[in-house]
Image (tube, rainbow, N blue to C red; front, side, top):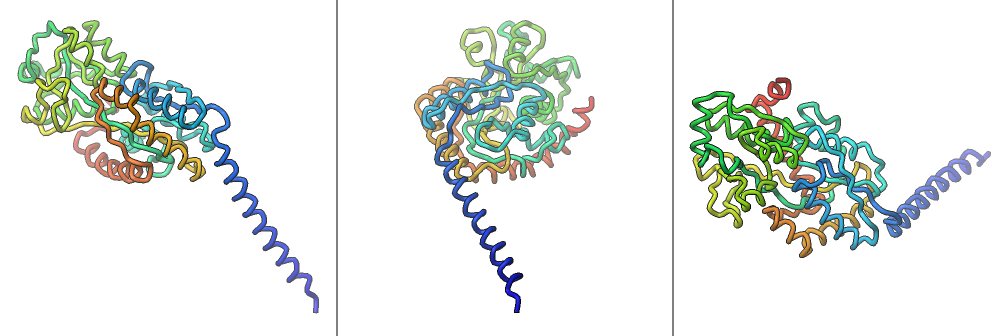
Length: 330
């Protein structure tokens, strides 16, 4: 009887097992050595904005923990989706990571982002939220939010506001507020919060809808804060009511998160998750978060992924309710 076929099969099986073991050993050694060079962090917003400031601090601390620098690369535009698309398309080797705006759950459904946030990212951490608000110049006719709403009702489509991009949290939050208030506003999109802030400071628009880029200018007396969008009032602006307090059932916090392309080695992901967990808990990050009125909302990668999936479903409902597809085309 010829045993050659049986021997060939045995050799193939042993060869496959050997290759698997070799790959596992290689992966383990790679993870142990990681990182061996600096890491690129894609920030999908312009330099100087609130998200950029918080991400830079996190990267400085996390890089110190990992023993390699994490260099922030700003790829702004399309309400954060240019950077998000670049992150999704990057090589999953642990050397390109970045901020994932929660608005990926909305833009993926609107067709702006050619990626699926449920499948195309490796989630590492949810870090902190944002304090959004409506601010106007100090010499504005709007002394209160009631003044703002009353004037908008009397002048449909005439009141302008700056925001950080069509379909983003500031745009959608303001349009949700407008719908609840029964007013029609004229939105003016910018590439990010920093540019939107300059728009209102320069007198080009009536109001600003943004995260707390307005804070130092409110404290300096250049801007007036009419309302914030969180569950509760902020500690730094405790005299400013929330939208909900004023009778508008709208809450927006849009937490920031960090991720990598899909397919990242689990051991490498674990190293990054641990580094950013420590970075979020660091005194340096707390100081920046306090300065930006950004509540800490830490979640580890797997829990953050579950959160993203839940928000995706909520956004499906919001897109239809606010007719966002029509707004994107207008």
